[in-house]
Length: 433
Image 1: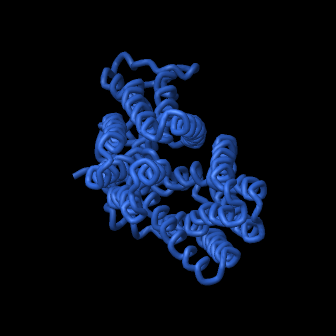
Image 2: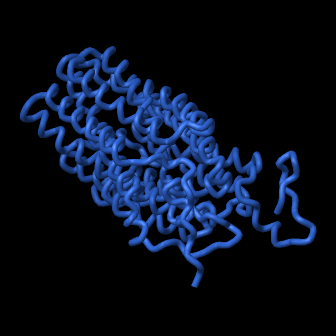
Image 3: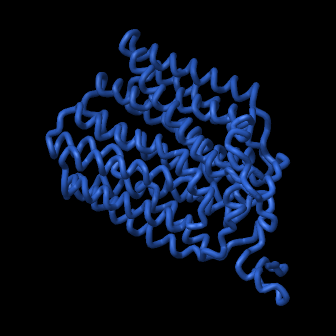
């Protein structure tokens, strides 16, 4: 396969095999780009199923007790955590990446439909577990298809575009879910997510399978000379990778509990306005993330390194924690949440790019995507668990200062130990047996 000066693919007349293997780093077709845009837009809300609306539905509509609701909510998180590493290995090892996304979307749709029609304890637990397992596959599969379509050199812009469509989808889904839940009933939220899931399974067929370079999609250096991916034990001996995974965990350790704690403060100080304020926080953060995701991709494509942008995201966390420790009005909380939109928008783009840098030439890109998601989940769990006790013992201001201290540790840890990863030399794949 070769390219003319206008960037249009054409087959070499003497090599018919090239018809099946597009050149690495080439420009994918407009159809593929639109298909990937659509997947990110529709999968935005599908990844988490009905998210926070499930607890409202089970409490208000089905009169479940808090303990049972907690088990139902936790079933998805546990299943997702257990499936992160297998999902990464599966995406690395298969060429049926489009099928994985389609099947995952259908599983999520059926799970949501099941919870709406059969809201019994066993059925809901099973549906939530299936939803968590499916949601673990979607992010690495989307990242792999992105890398396989555009190559590492164009990944900055593509991941930025992915995140932009993802946050735009979240905005639309939140608006539709809120309206349908308010005027049609909670069950229509499940039907909405089910429709999104089925649509995402259908739209993935827009991407022609022969445009995905599967060797490139798993972080292989040279698609024309594929080799065996490096052993997992050798991958985990890489110091920079371990520092990055720890940094991703620390980022969410210092960040995850801040907004829930701010919502609890609003419940105490401004009862009746807490729900509206939290909804405004979500909308403001998502709007901000759309712009920040676009800007982060553009900055990276124009030569800005990964490290300064990731440091900026980490530096915003202690500022946000300090402001939350002294703020109590709804307007202040919404304004402070803008910082979360900036930090999370940068993290969503740069974390994928750093993972691509660190796995270039290893054939383990999607496995590291799973490891990153696992680190994020561990950090978020520690954040909510430990900050809750800090608030219980010392009050909300102390809880926010505790998270601020964690965020400062994350900033120093990454700044001192993590090198710049942009344009690093790839590790050659091991020869095939």
